[in-house]
Image 1: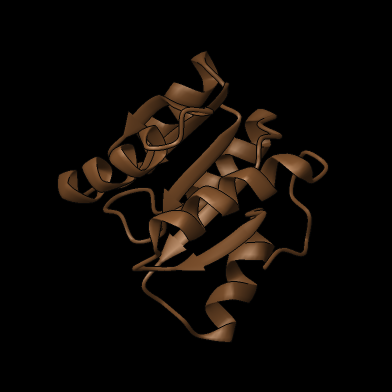
Image 2 (image 1 turned 90 degrees about the vertical axis):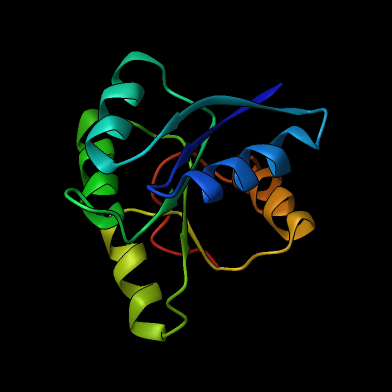
Length: 130
């Protein structure tokens, strides 16, 4: 079973992502963090198979949290979820260590496919993505 971590400061978004993940019997939720600092602490204790991370969070944002996760040695795929659809946002995500980038709102089937595809790639930041 693939274990998915969710990082988002909005409770409603966490719940929507949790429900989407649990709708697939091959997936489970490893943990939910409400900010970048909590995500790094959770990953230090329990590295998930995939991380779904919001970018715009108070304090430590998704970009910095991703950099810290990579510095900690996390090689799991990290997928950026953002409302920013500009190419420079995508480039910044990939430069920060994200494996993939998806614009919200994202349909459940597309989100589940991103998780599945992420696990098929070599572990660690790809420098590519899509």
